[in-house]
Image (spheres, rainbow, N blue to C red):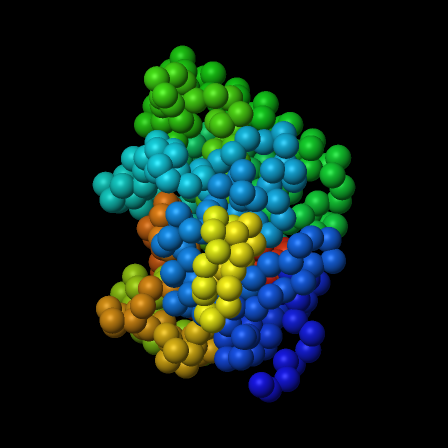
Length: 413
């Protein structure tokens, strides 16, 4: 076996700051696709890096559990990590998972998304105009694309889904960062800070819940406030957990796919030219942005019994980490996986990417995320055709979220 390029520990969040550790993941796919990863502070885990194995694990919830009682959906054990927050549906197995999933599915139907499109586009245009004004006021010096466009664009859509004011977006953004960026000292300076933010989310979400109980609408908060669980209203702790999940999911995937997508277009100018000449490619191209960026690095399952995977025997209770970032670069699935191709998914025979997960836990908001990505680049191409990054930007320290804190850009106008 060819020696590994370095000691491989995909849990180590520091290595994700300069870039996703694709060199290590590529080596694992080729030489040890179901790899035992030691932990300094835990029992160790299996790293699953090939697309087919990730799909197999994701579609067998009986053998590979997401339940919080078995550890949950992250590398660390949720049953001891966040005792103040109850279980959300991302850390449930069927049939309970499907029951909670059905509560919010009406918020993501095709008619609902069609009705949201005009508002999403209008907000995108307004943000571009604001970005241009900032650019001109600053003497046409580089401006931050994350703060100026990608983050508020995603958060304002989330605000619409919740039926709250756009001004609440800053709070939602701050809370999302505090929840997912466990090892980034800038976004999560202390555990006290996290508990403070959870407390703020609790008060805010419970306030919304009371408002919607009195005056329901067609927003997600109303759906949750009026849903029944075993014949009774959803418990406050479950409501909070679902609220937190929606805040994180509604923000991170879209924001970082757009930011990383802009970098991809800069790295592959011929693909940018192709998309600008034929914006219709953005409809399927949104999937290539998500494949390329892989905004969620991993998800976890826990084996409920002894099972063989990739020639390895996984024991009952073992942690199994699914590295979406690796599966989305699997050479056996995608031709030239390290090349960004805006028209890759125009071919319906190309297997679906793993950026939104797969199986029972596939992202409920994937169509909304794709819609936002498409609209964002349609408007950016039309209004800022010379937009380009002028630096790498600062990346979030995280083995979970592939995110950027900022990205300086030249508007070219």
